[in-house]
Image (cartoon, rainbow over all chains, first blue to last red; front, side):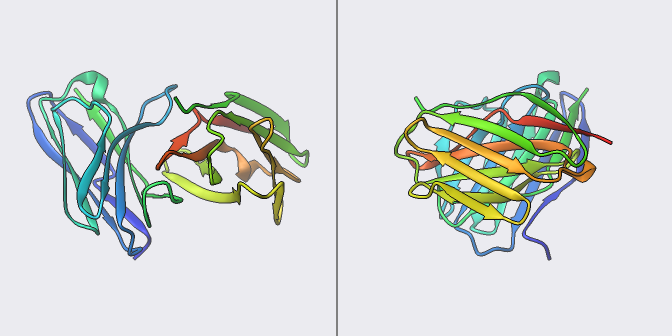
Length: 112
Length: 109
């Protein structure tokens, strides 16, 4: 199994739906991250978990809710999203915060 | 606060060298990284340099670091069409990784 996997790869959801994005890392890392990548915007760090504890939340709206049940798995629960939330959501992991990060392929989310 | 700046676009001809530049503000950075993102994919770690080094070479890639000017560059020799992608520099500022906005490299045949 390759380093960091994400499912689903593509997701289309309505504004009233609830869905979850999943990330799994097989690298034995202790930190995991969610990023949002929108067209023509810098990469936005959303959440950082280190040793399963959230250590950073960059003022992300509450309609995004992360969950890190163990050091290998990270979820992003989505509810009542807005069209402007359409983006590529990238998961990454690293040995520790500020170490080099390894990225998953991303989930392309479209909110209709 | 910490900031990482890159030019947004670079176009080169196949076989030429590409130089992608990056400036950063955090002088306490320990490591600086270059990532590559191909269309529809996540970011792939290309190479990195430790802050006490001036240069690192890895096959077609050469990383130059000018710590005094806080300037980092990535040189790709003999650029190929498969090198077309977005290139991100990143630095380890105060316990987290700070990314630039990415440089789109277009390689013309």
